[in-house]
Amino acid sequence: QVQLVESGGGLVQAGGSLRLSCAASETSFSIDTMGWHRQAPGKQRELVAVITSGGRTVYANSVKGRFTISRDSAKNTVSLQMEYLKPEDTAVYYCNGQLVVGGTVVDYWGQGTQVTVSS
Image 1 (cartoon, rainbow, N blue to C red):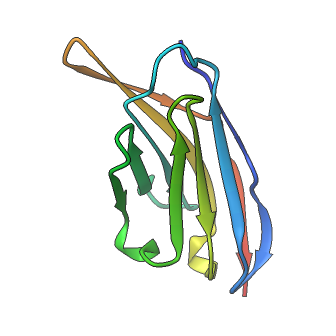
Image 2 (image 1 turned 60 degrees about the vertical axis):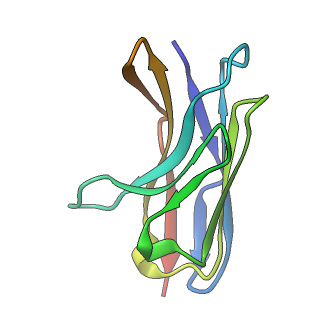
Image 3 (image 1 turned 180 degrees about the horizontal axis):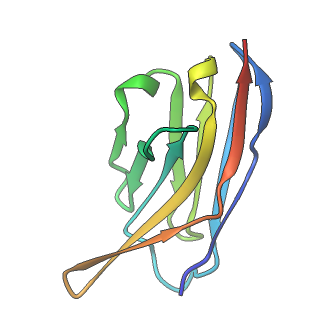
């Protein structure tokens, strides 16, 4: 069982920056894909950004050019640098790790960290 622990959320004014970090409890193997999802009140959880062990990245259109995801595959850590934050970025942000085991994708989730952007 892999545990993911997030840190770095908080309250920031519109236009400000925050950095989220996530560390996995398991480091003996590299997690295939790590990333961030978010869920705003009354909305479904959505992908924000993901990064593969090879460094390929995917971003939601709404955050392209403002957010940057990075990872240390050896340590199974992932970070999300968020710039030019907007009130609509307000949500609980969840760290996600995916392992492919025998052709099956296994998802692991952190407990979530609140990001609040005031206008």
